[in-house]
Length: 193
Image 1 (cartoon, rainbow, N blue to C red):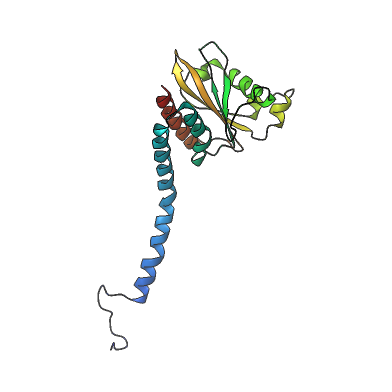
Image 2: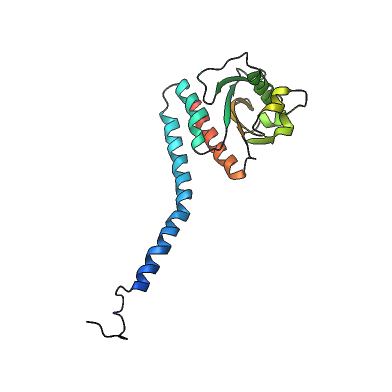
């Protein structure tokens, strides 16, 4: 039996040590968990990209699975046959097929084709807001609910993007998000080459 006022055994458990040991450890793990999760998601996505067997599977993955790490609300994949031709939408997130008669599809193609030449001739993502694509006369642009776009050029040939991904979000694209998007675009481009 312990006498009152006696010193605790060095290194032995005391109620105070038990409280200190339990509480802070959980917070440290929680604080670093988000970073580990983002890195893990990026690595998982890159591995999945490399495992896609067909162009159709790769397109579906690009338009839908990349949502796990990029906060877009809608994505459009565009392609062109050669550097001088216009971009055509070949896929839309959450849709099985593209209806070429829908005004939104024509508007997206015009938006990408209207980007400055220097934007399509580089590998960097290009973020732009509604003012860059919302013409007061264009009802589709004015009514479109997502005001922030990110263009990701892909499959560079002859100094021009042969394809790309146009992502729309409700909030401006941050620099870290753009870096992650660029890395994913590079991975998709390598698989497509």
